[in-house]
Every structure is written in C-alpha cells, then in structure tokens.
Image 1 (tube, rainbow, N blue to C red):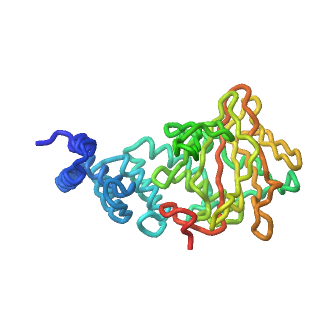
Image 2 (cartoon, rainbow, N blue to C red):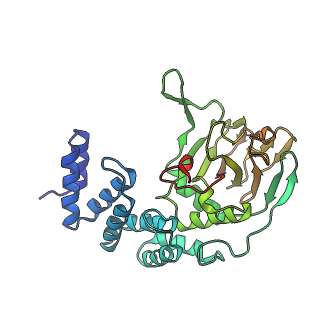
Image 3 (cartoon, one colour):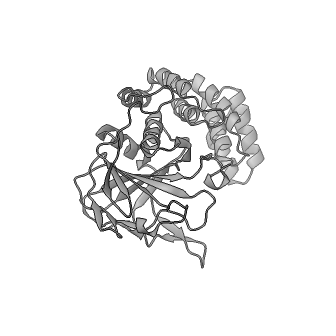
Length: 327
C-alpha cells in the first residue's frame, strides 16, 4: 500500500517516468485519495504533465471538495465564478463559498469581506463610484477609497507568497535578468487564485472604467521596497492584436516615503493613499499609442509600497488562451 501517492508521483516525474506518475495518481484518485484527486486536477489545469482539460479539472475538484479538501474547494469556487471549464456562475460560486465557510476559516474570512459589499446577482457593484478628472494630456481620473483597507490587505495577502523580482529576457542569452525599468517584486493573481473577493473587486474595476471584466488581465501586484521604482514607461504594447487600452492603478497602502506616480507629460504627481485608484487611457481615439501616458513609479525612500494594477484590453479574452487569441 502506498502511503503518499502524491510524493511517489513527484519522484516518478523527477525520474522522467511521466506515464507511471499519471497512472499512479489516477488510480489513487479512483480509490478516493483526496490529495491525489487535487493533484490530478492541478495537472489538468496547468496542462503538464498531461494536456490541459478545464472541464475535467472541475470534475476532479468537485470530487476532492466533496471528500473534504479545503484547497480544492477554494480553487473550485474561483473557477466557478470566472468561467473556467464552464460558463461563469457567480451564484453557484457564492453557494460553494457559503458551504466552505462552515468548516474552513479562510473561506469564512472571504465570506465576511464579500458580505460587506453591495453586489448584483453577477457580482458587480450596484452603485460604483464616479471618477474625478485630476489631469489632462493625459486624461487621468481619480477615485478616492475605491477599495477598503480590508480589501487592500486581502489582495496583498493573496499575492504575498508568489512575489518574485521583476525580470526580462536577455535577447543575447535568452536568460532572465533583472528588469532595468521596473525593479520591484511582483506577482499575478491568476484564475485559480482569484478569490470571490478578488473577482468582485475586478468587477468593480470594470464598472468604474466602463468595461467588461473579461477585458482585464489578471490583477498584477507590485511591492516596492526602499530604492525600488518603475522608471518612465507606457503601458500600451508596441505589437499586439488586442491592445491595453486602459490602466487602473489601486494603491494598497500608505505610510511610506516616496513612491508617487508621476506623469511626465503634464508633471502630474499622484501621492498614494490606501484604496485610492487612478485611471487613464493608453491609446488615442484612433487606437494608436498615446506617448503622453508615459508615467513612472517614483523610488520608495522608506517603508514598503504595495500597488495593484489592472491592464484592460480592447476585447474580452480567456485567461487560459491569452489576450492575443481574443475573438
């Protein structure tokens, strides 16, 4: 009898015995091993070492959840709401969260945050705030306290264990090297990590920008420590079939020195404050890149700055196939 089929499968994979590893996990899952069911689901989501199969992953997650795996429950909730492997079902995801909250404190904490929001049946805000213009050329709009302090903390906590130094590929060697423009640490809250709180906030960002939540890239979280910065840049991409037409920045904390957002063309400087957001378009009316949107995250001189960024594309897309493959 194998005591830990997941650990054994990992050893088989490390030895290059992929087929044996997959067979072992499948057999253990059929026997009701919840860890094997969850590992099989994550393989189907990742597309390695087996082909990606989102509906199949959902089936395995349901089985693991029904047997009491809290991690599987949280992933199932996320995928149910964002429409991975089946049409998006906010009400269904909310029901799953209600059930999970009865036995899992993580789910219960998320439910508390969600219950503090006033949402439609699809998770959108009922009465989103309006932005106020604070700069021209580029047109920059500001919303005070778009996110609550508790919501900001939740976002930072979702990303904290995934933060990595910013890198770019060296064109000469192909290796990742330190990014000379952005020196912060960053992480992306992808579809399996999007709690219902994060998804409700993404829908809030869509509402205040007049876009569909499916147009937004996964929420990107940046952490700036003393000396780190994002040098002047534009967010629009030089070559793309689905341009980043709009950007929303949400400041997740305050109490640090430096770290303002500075727009080069009009010398607008925005001082971060917890929960505040700024919105600006990256392209002109004809769809061309607007160089006036060049902006920088000024160096942090003391403390730590946390920032959430949502880049919004011209057309909705699937996070699993990417914005360049939008219909």
